[in-house]
Amino acid sequence: MSMEFEQFNPEQEKLKKLTQAYNDDGYVTLYRYENPNKSYDATDNPREGIVSKQEVVGQWFTDNISDLKAYSHMRKPGGRITTVRIPKSELDQYDAMKLEQTKDMDIESGNYIIPDELQKETRIEIPVDVETINPNKFLFKDWKILDEFIEDNVSTSEKILTNV
Image 1 (cartoon, rainbow, N blue to C red):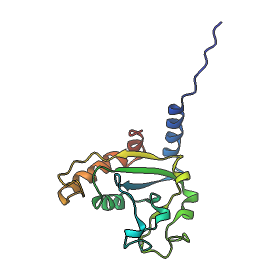
Image 2 (tube, rainbow, N blue to C red; image 1 turned 180 degrees about the vertical axis):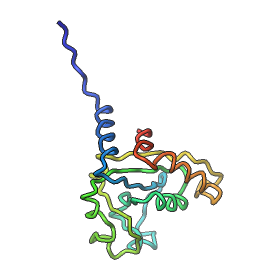
Image 3 (cartoon, rainbow, N blue to C red; image 1 turned 120 degrees about the vertical axis):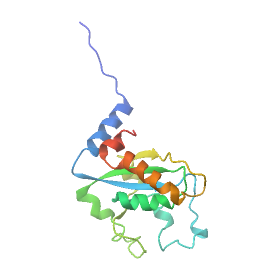
Image 4 (cartoon, helix red, strand yellow; image 1 turned 90 degrees about the vertical axis):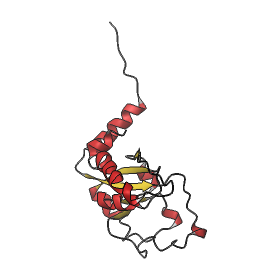
């Protein structure tokens, strides 16, 4: 009589949790574009306190794919799109227009501040593989390709999960 034991596999367990979260209708997907290797220096940024703050860098997300596309157009190539899933019932508490530290800033609706600790549960990072001749920013002629990349990789939970 042989007994087989299933070994704990952290990668499989993580994929299982992500699949559950990304297929749960009680959650909403949030998106962000992260620039490659670009540090944020609040002392040298004239927009500090107006559209961003040092303490929330890396925590801004949108719930709208169109906003992700528009934001990505203005970013530096070589970055990544990051997605997270948040329970719909909790989303309002992360609304940047309502949070004490950001409510006085010049921001649009549909922006959320998701603390790093909360991101860890469902965070998926997707490298943006769109080539451009300008290493500092996507050119206008790159936007269609970038938009297609976003549609092909993050427009549904199924597409997002293929990047894990």
